[in-house]
Length: 160
Image (cartoon, rainbow, N blue to C red; front, top):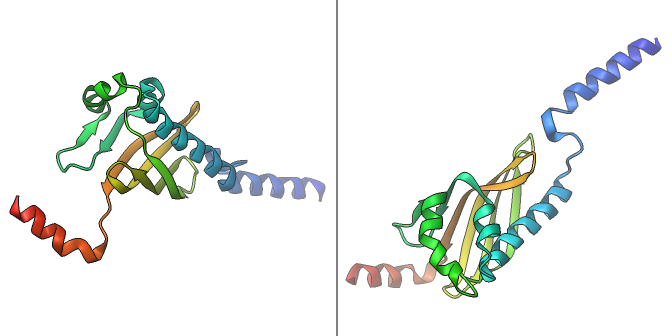
């Protein structure tokens, strides 16, 4: 009887602990990820290109606010490095961030609001967990526009 109980418990553990999901709880991962993204934004604010660009996965995509701004990691480095020669590349203050996770806890995605020199922007991104930590796979920076100002905005850009 004891062997059967041990066998059943072992099977339960194997089935319930898929890949790296065991011992990972969303609350602690959310805290780690908030620190990671806060440090990433801070790296831009203090022009630390090693942390900022080093937080991006090798095949990361960064979408800026201009429709032409779609960069792979090296393109983004080539474009953005001139800003990191200053004391501050850009300073975005994040708030109101929400996280979601894949079932295996190896992917996370988020959206956040940012206080920026352009006004309130929205950032969203996808991250992947590696053995040595999280990396940003995709980030999208977007301007926000209140719905009641949409017609005025459409008129303004159609005149240009």
